[in-house]
Figure 1 (cartoon, helix red, strand yellow):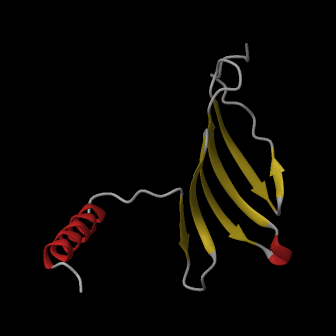
Figure 2 (cartoon, rainbow, N blue to C red; figure 1 turned 135 degrees about the horizontal axis):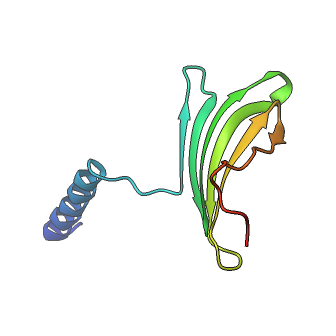
Length: 103
């Protein structure tokens, strides 16, 4: 038989966690799908990297979209980039005109 005070404590802890969900959700990946279940927006975090991908699936699985990526520095500077995907291929975007040249 379960100790009633222990059960009450567990219920209180669960209620506190549910209340916290109303304010913040902590996860490593969030996927927003359209009405047909197709991924349209993907927010993800991995050790040292975070990204936001907005995409459209094209015929033959060739994704078209854009991804914002930020990575911890490999040397001294953090890496931040914008990647364009066209028909499954990565398209190199020109740097902004006011961007400083790489060190």
